[in-house]
Image 1 (cartoon, helix red, strand yellow):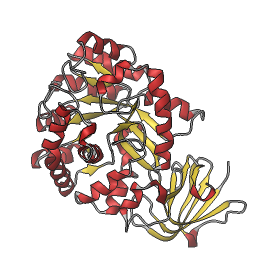
Image 2 (cartoon, rainbow, N blue to C red):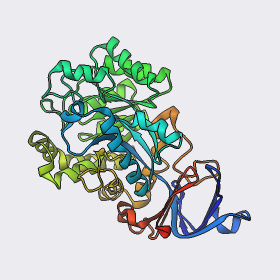
Image 3 (cartoon, rainbow, N blue to C red):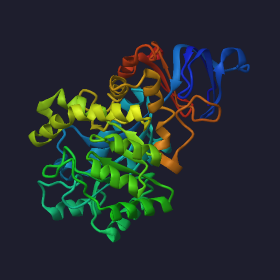
Length: 415
């Protein structure tokens, strides 16, 4: 494998202050050195690259590879899994081009794509997949417009939505995902926007059911990610021991304090709200009404969490295939700019997408997201310094090169 030496005007390590005049040296699939140029070891035979900025590859901690082109989840069982998985392969390339070298996939076909990427058959980000999303009957992961038997059959036969009620069935549903080598478990603790008849404020799983899910996942050293909009679900999920709160729309002072005490991580997913509200014709009327009702409250909640010192990780809730679709893969970098609008600094937003992001996997977290010796050689170079222009990370044209595990997978200079 080629050894690369990257000389950059600014080195953004992921955590800690930026280094002017920095150098990163790859060593196979990991980083051999990252730091000031004055301390860099000699690199005879290395391929040398000069860049304006070098930083770690980014993580999307809340994405879905679904292989659909419109926000109509009722179509999931209507298309063959092989068709949707094939369609999603183009999204892998879009993610890399956008600078996202790792994805925590919280429900989708990523459970099938992950080993194909790992074996080198397809280029793509490292995928840490949850398998199927766990939901109560009638909950956020139910498809209310379809017969219940259809939805149940879909979840029991490889679909992305698994209904489970009662502690025994919750236990079995978690074990089914572990059997598929899921790296985390995703549960819908509250209602949501894209479920037709439930309410985002309502808690769905009981605390006992959530505790069972967390316990069984924990036996296999897997963390649990909880979809939560309303405060009752947030508090129940924290009491049960989930690691991450997804969305957090109705966080208040008490809930933020509880998150801080529990060491839980917030994954805000600002992108989906921004993208879909900007294209209302792409959203079913029932979902549009819920999105509009939560828009201002969601931004206030993220700002409040930041003020309380809650740990925040970058996640978009991107789910559609095609960079030109609203909320489509390749548009992931928009999330960082949106986080800055809620009060984070550019450095804090970058840390949320790099050094903090792997922590959302708990015990499954790899050495990733930082430019440090021994960490994965997932690296970006840019022609702009995102610390002064965070919007650059939303435009893949500014991301000039991408390395995934030490392999150069994007090079604008050669294209």
